[in-house]
Image (tube, rainbow, N blue to C red; front, side):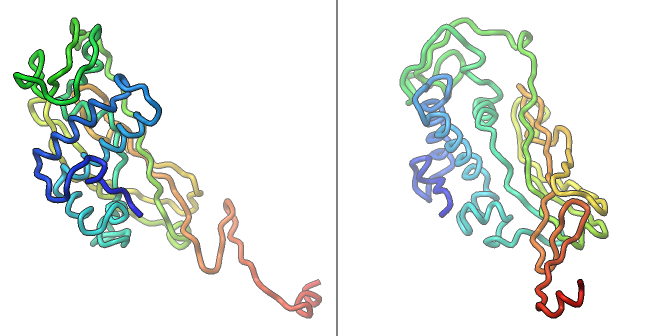
Length: 262
């Protein structure tokens, strides 16, 4: 059974965009690991971010509503695994901290401010504090300047790339369609962009071979985009099995045939 993203955010299936945002804001602030040190809070923080990323994206939400979590990972259609023209689709891993930064317009309140403590999760009177309307109930001390913070790169996003024995034997081309966030011209807000990454599989590539697309992950004002990495994995073959550079065939023979081979 796949995840129930509506239940994770505590909203109904017919929730509006504003209700989805409000639910995420409240839960993300509640479970942020810089505030909540209880066991399980960080995992909850990740789940909330994943739910928001799906339900706030109209295309992903449509697929999820029809086919569930497995449909997302298969690219829609309930597990087909491929799209028209040989393009394959996949559902990207979610970086909960990046989702958090993007939600607050590139500003992570827990990273930018120090010397204060967190109050209620709900919006307080006046709609916010210190110029951040989404952070009502939070009180912070002196700000750190952005100039003193060095950008760090988000961790690599890895995906298995399933290939057949025939594709490994002769080589093949795979086209992987990804959805990612890119910065708008204002360098603060983002939009969703689809992009096709082309992988030329060379004959003889071994299982575990990694193909890296540098900095093709989500863009953010505060971080360097993650590398996207595909890892070759053999699809099961009905007849043969690959062991390194060897092709192995398991045959059942009679005792008489065995004697003749001796």
